[in-house]
Amino acid sequence: MTFLKKTTAIIITLAMLAAAPGCRRNNIAPAGEKIKRPNEAFLTYGDTNETIVELSKVNSSVWVHTSYYEEKGVLVPSNGLVVVTKNGLVLIDATRTERQMESLDKLVSEAFNSGFQSAFITQAHPNRLGGASYLLKKDIPVSSLPVVAKAAEKKGFVVPDIISQGDSAVFNIDGTDFELYYPGEGHSQDNTVLWLEKEKLLYGGYITAEYGAGSLSNTEEANLKTWPESIKAIQDRYPEIDIVVPGHGQWGDSSLLDYTLELLKE
Image (cartoon, rainbow, N blue to C red; front, side, top):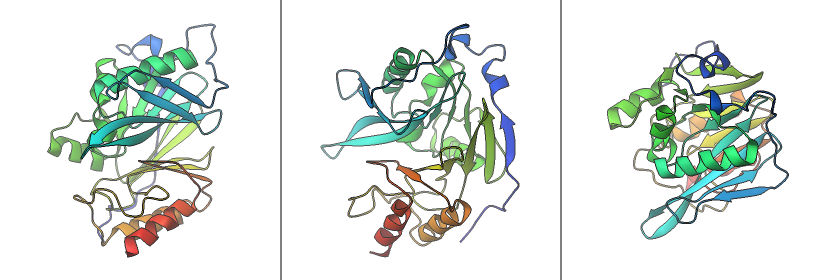
């Protein structure tokens, strides 16, 4: 298995970037106003498959955003995260399209009294990166590890504008640490994960399967030989996982990683 050499995680503060000249000031709660934390467990916006986005509450600080796309006549859900900090919202993975991203932006603005102050992309895939062009047009910082940025450039996707070094990096935003980590090849050559230490939450994206999947999703770019080793690298690095959010379907606990390993044996 080919791994990038392990490096000490780089701690980067993005709060300064969100307030830097050229960045939109309405991406954070207006002065004197607090971010709202909705009591509802489910929120939605849009009226067609091309515009509908949903927010499902994990806890008071983390929501799963879900949008949809059609594949072989079947409507498929695609997940990402919205994390609430004291001054604004942080997005983990964009929607597939700019229209969906615009819907999500409007939904969070209404629900939380705030927009996105920064975003992280975990994989150069249409469902993770497609709507990122909307974010960049609004001067919202979009970050990734080098392995994702290189893959995005190679595939002709929009490239994140903040690229850290090495196979891991910790970004501190309003006192919350967001750790990007590349465990090695699996679903693709560039699948990274994001760890929220405060929440004991792992956003696994496409390297983790959803419960009840029965089989692995699209494996055209997968490295089936190294995928199990990459899952085990995640388990070794984060032994205290409480919540795992996959790229598709319902989230669960750390057993979702074991479930993925079982599917890889088939």
